Image (cartoon, rainbow, N blue to C red; front, side, top):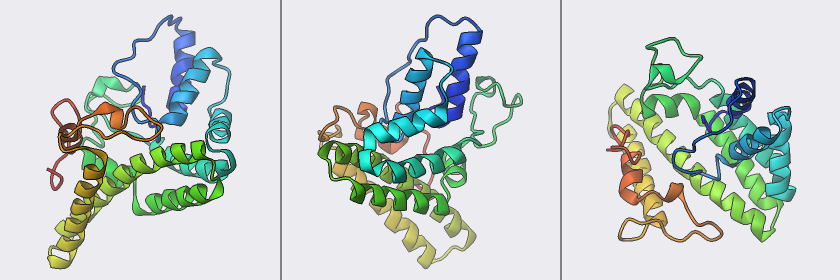
Length: 234
């Protein structure tokens, strides 16, 4: 399941029904329930009724999860999904039905984050998240917003690192280097607030898992399967 693309999930379920698929194997687990929560919801609902519309389901999700904060959160997710619908990253050319064989348009995390999370989009998402936090004081809503905020902080920071790294290579100098170094320090500070001294995720109020239960070493490397993050993160 391509959890970044809400329309892709909807069309995938319809293709399953047309092809007579009777069962699906879940490799791993649902992991980033903050940023990916709406897609899991759409996936589950359309498996039950493929005629449902993903845009309406996204609205249902935001109303149920975020209460009075639903309007800014709907804008938050719509902005992200609109950008991710252009997804073209593939390390395995036969993994996507809509990609020409052998094409690797966004084959590195740097390419992916710089293209799909530009500064304007990050600022728009951050502004809507702040509006949402101020719109509903309900503890359960705040707990869900807190999870979204933590996962978004990770994405925003990593996207900023790669964009500043490109700026440094374009205009090498201490000014551009210091901006990049500050963002790298911010990444380490974020990770230290989420993991204990042994590298295990700290308890997160209201949630049993954060980052899918990954360890600090795995998150630093960019994944459990050997890591994918390149310079300057590594």
